[in-house]
Image 1 (tube, rainbow over the protein chains, first blue to last red):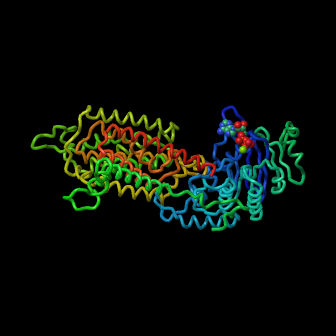
Image 2 (image 1 turned 90 degrees about the vertical axis):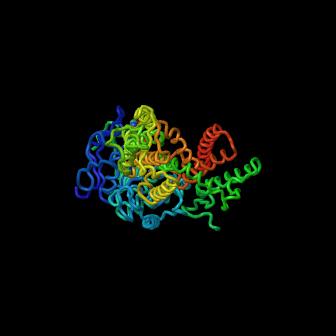
Image 3 (image 1 turned 120 degrees about the horizontal axis):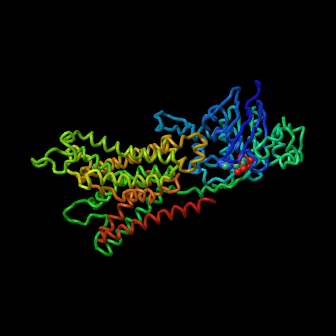
Length: 254
Length: 356
Ligand SMILES: Nc1ncnc2c1ncn2[C@@H]1O[C@H](COP(=O)(O)OP(=O)(O)O)[C@@H](O)[C@H]1O
Ligand SMILES: [Mg+2]
């Protein structure tokens, strides 16, 4: 029990009549890297949105860091130590890199409610540090990120997550839109997290990447978790048969 | 600069792609427009637009014209500051002109003198209790009206998810109705000396400049400003980052309403009267100033400095038309064309940038 970082029991989300997520029982242990795989529409992003409280769950319980949590919003989840790279980039294109890194958790020189004065210098310095520790290279952090390539933007998003990572990192298809070199860069950041002992939930369609990086693979199918397999007890074909429903459709999964 | 490839594993980054600050472009446009009027003036009127040509005055520039230009834009400019932060945060406010009307009527009702030339004030709205009140009363009453109207705008937009366009259109019609109903269409006049000093002489310009500097600082250096840009740029991202977008929007529209009512106080003080039709179309003039100044109607881009420059362009064009003795009707039409042109320019700029 002590070594469990995140656990969901019976986590369920319905959008009107759509059962996007049904009775998801999920466990993540300290330092563990788990991949979540599944077809498009299987409910992976929905799962992430419930855990991070971007949306409110329909039913079920979430335990994080040893106690049950009911986050009211994403900020609470983040303050509790869950850092997320969402599938749709949660970046503001018109802001520069430090503003994006610190969006919603700015550093201040002087507190004055909503009109608190930003400490732009400190945020810029910490941004450069964060980019350095994650080995992300951005030519000019003072430019709006609109002018950056998809890979650079994704790296900003991931650097944000990795830099603030405390207890859990979730990445929803972080490399889906990236080229080969950019993907390698992101994978390096993930290995860095493993070395630092930061637990990770990685959502990915890339089985090569999944087998490369994680300890365990959880398969979602039509809103349900149909398999949870240690990397060494499965292979690509096995996973694909769970994803497509050849295996595990009726089998009670425990 | 020889290293054109650095960054992620040889990802190309071209420093030349860095866009020139929008404000510089607007400033250049301002100079071009002034120059155009100067040339047209010399060709068509045989007179200078910018420079002093009168013998009895010993100044280099035509200071009178310059004063008129800034004076006539400063009141709408105050509204423009509020509208700028609304548009940057991805919204729109069509109610400011009507808020000006309603606020002017209400504030003026509390700013009247008891006697005019020995007779009771012929335009009195309330009884004796509301006469000769200290200036703070009408100012506070007026500002409260605008803040309240803005609060309603913001709450509607934040909590009922009515599009800003519709919510503020409703406020536009309602507030105008209120200003007509308030005194059954009669003008309200004869303010106290205290009230009359608020908008006297160049006071509107002073107030506009002070507020412009204040809002420039707010938009540039505070969390509030940063969140305006963030929400206008990507509202979902702002929400996912933990920004309370509802509270922020309410504050944005409340401030916009407050600035509109401040403009109303200055305007009614300057004119020494308030009328139900005051401020008609000001919302569009204010939006035009912002858009001309490079504030994107898509949200996320623009600045207070841009809007101030936009306001100057606006003033120069109107003043230039008067100078060229063009009909007032043309001015309206040209205003319309300028707004559309500025929006088209913005969209075109966006397109050029999206796959940059
Ligand atoms: N906001 C929403 N409203 C209605 N249905 C939704 C919403 N979000 C997701 N869904 C549905 O929930 C299911 C799971 O979606 P999602 O979690 O995005 O899948 P995945 O990330 O695994 O591709 C899909 O059928 C999708 O259409
Ligand atoms: Mg998804």
